[in-house]
Image (tube, rainbow, N blue to C red; front, side):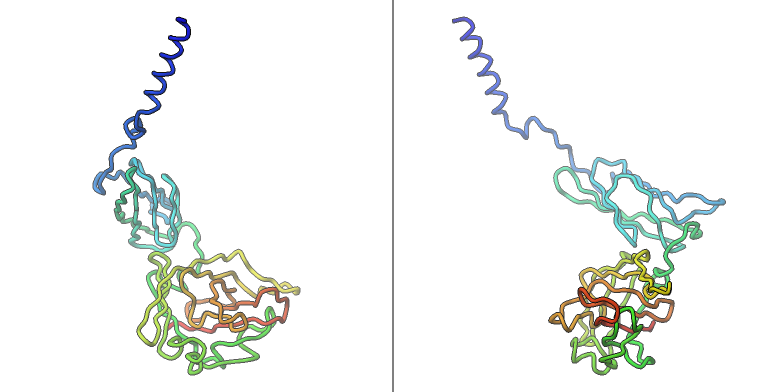
Length: 276
């Protein structure tokens, strides 16, 4: 009988603890304000100069999101690569335990690009932002041709004046603005409407022909917005977000998109732009 009473007592105690509200037993911590953040963004020193590799460190009790201009990292501590000299802004957004967000901007000075960066960032943005338009000096600015065969529109070809018939407001008077800050791409239509998204490069995704010639130098990917007239007509004008880069320098940009499943000389679409 004593054993039965003791067992009942233990069960009762466990039941009482089990019914205690969770929020009274779990301390999720207090929210902090932006001025309480303990953050550092420190460039590595190379030959006495501040390099473009920067060590980010968050010693605050919040989850991390660092926007360093050309990318985002959510690590508490990370080393990132900046792509421009001079003053660079890094925007930190912290998530408090109660779900509230706080933000702080850090300024980092880069003396030199001690570590190599893809030249394409400079080509497209000039280290800040840069406008691109249709290259009307070329025989055609948009159209189709052979995948891994042509390097510009060759079969069905259109001039800038005909683009509005394919994508309203994206012909004469339209432009794209590539910005280093946040790696943003803004498509400004001739109607005044502006669509904003992001862009990124992967210059490891080259396409080499059988004779060893590099046909595509890498890929440009956009998010949330396409380039001007960024559609695939034979797919119901589906938006295109990934492009092979056939040519890129400070003045010219030629892109290509192959229709799904095509091989050499299958149908591909071409875009021909120039710096404004």
